[in-house]
Amino acid sequence: MKEKLLHTPDALLVLLLFCVASLLFDRVLRRFSAHVDTRASEMFRLLSNSQRAILLTVGVIMAVGELGFDISALVAGLGLTGFALGFAMKDAISNLIAGVMIVVYKPCEIGDRIEILGVQGEIIDVNLRYITVSDKLDRWLIPNSKIINSQLRIFGHEEIEADSEPAAEKPTAPSRSARKKAAQKSKARARKNAS
Image (tube, rainbow, N blue to C red; front, side, top):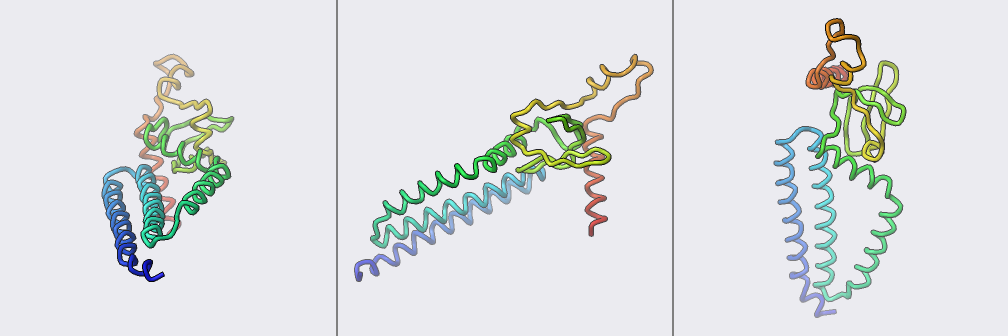
């Protein structure tokens, strides 16, 4: 027991190093997130929280090992726990990974008119779990995994032209950037009205 007490400063140093590393990574990720759009900043927030949990868990395990305890059973138990949690949360994890893919690859954006799974409307919000689609009457929350794994129809300017009358008579559809600006303005108005 006395020998374990002698290793206490080493264990505290290991834990302190992992805490400092976690804080540094957090600062770096926050600085990067300040320079990207709001959808990508959610991904950086997720990465920040994940790295903090991982680094602190590894730091605690290494500090306990530094005290002289056998950590092999603890590591094996954490592996089994991770497997069980991953299996139980596979849908949530699937939506999260699909959300990251949507943020990175941008197959659709706020303001786009889409049709998916029989739902047709305008995208008014995109986050890491679901996409919010709205028409004049209803609002739907579509899980990101469905966006990635299902056929997604994005109504574009060319598609509207193909479905309309001859070119001289047809009205022009708003551009993607105009729809995006309108969606952002409506979100800003909604926030202003809520406060």
